[in-house]
Length: 295
Length: 295
Image (cartoon, each protein chain N blue to C red):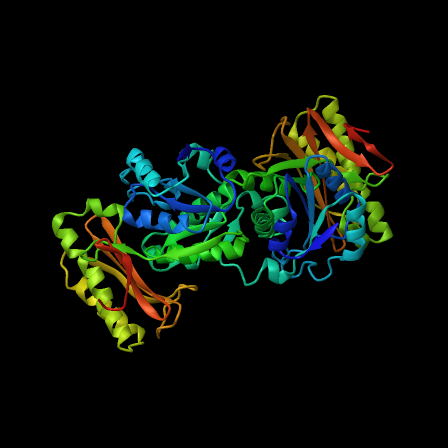
């Protein structure tokens, strides 16, 4: 695996059909599953690590975001990444940008309500990676459902010739969605956090049973979170996967997203409707099975 | 010369080092001089024609902007353009964009004061051409000085690996800067419009004589415009060519820009300081000479 830190070097070592997986590092099995998927659809796989200051608000955890690039590099090599791109802040932002990407109104809803301009920062980093690395295909996880929708829109609106592939959420064996921030959960918060998965599984069972009313599904997903004293519910919302608007009735391109605070950690989780069924995701104990519907 | 209308077709016929000249069509010798310059620094030259609705405000001349694609295609072929890219509105904007490019504050000054969000629209089209065509080098005229500065900033801020080359202004033999909109000037407006060039030449003579005071140069450039009853001065301003801020003293990276209204036509003109001297540009009667300083 080659390691490069400038866009120029990266382009020199990339050839043929280029795949990209963009990360902020501190990799877990979820990231690795994206890389494995990307590996199957490209000739040269570049994976990036960049903790992007523009997507953190003042007071958020930019400084404390977990980092371990040597461990990340070894993990990337183990799944066949060809090029690790880890730009410096100076390579990404040689000066304060004057030209900005604005994602409003898509970026204002859901996570954007609690994190103003977060998605403008995400979009800026994604545009730079697409412009500077010129990938042909990029794989993004469905866990960051709003990010995935915004990246799809960005590719359409800015004419980037990049195929965007979504990939299932990877979960611990007990159902907790993997996140680099989970290391900061206390034991009791870790247990409480399972309520996000429980609510989604209950809502997914209802969908399988034919329920299509958005408010009913949202209420079922929210109930276990609201019952947990260590969690504060941000939202539970049935959402159009392209327009990011609230859906009164389930559609074929939708996700049910939940978000809650556990101490200093903001937790998100969701299921997308894939092929007509709720996709709960992959579990580490059975990584070859994609669970759909209430388990 | 190949003619294509979709980004996907265009990429298939582009190879090696790709040069781009982006236009709104209705070509004049100024456009052709950009293409000739680009031809010398690339292997495949693509020139685009797209009258971009996003850079016209309501009430501006989007509908009436002059168009003649068959004449343009013949002119392009005559200067060695390899690929003419003329996308439809649907190819460029399959839907109203949600993701926007914002150029403020660079786009708010000078032309932006009279044309709010004009440069956001320009930047959107340029981003799409850079993303979709993946050029290695692009040539822009120095006549649109603010556009050139914003495109340079856009490339830096969004990490596009595109070399941006500026090229001298092309002028009629009497000094009028070429513009597709000049066809809409009446005979008397056409004569009045020469005041922009006269003022710039007078200011350039002062620069050659050692004058560096911004207000003095601006006043000298403005005087002939203000003396013309058929013209209304928008501004005469000594400007930092990178930051687009007003300069109290001449610097080595600056332009002196003037803008005036002649009936329905907005006229702009300027000289840049190139290699320490004011660059007036090329005249059609002596196209191989770049005039510098007061003529």
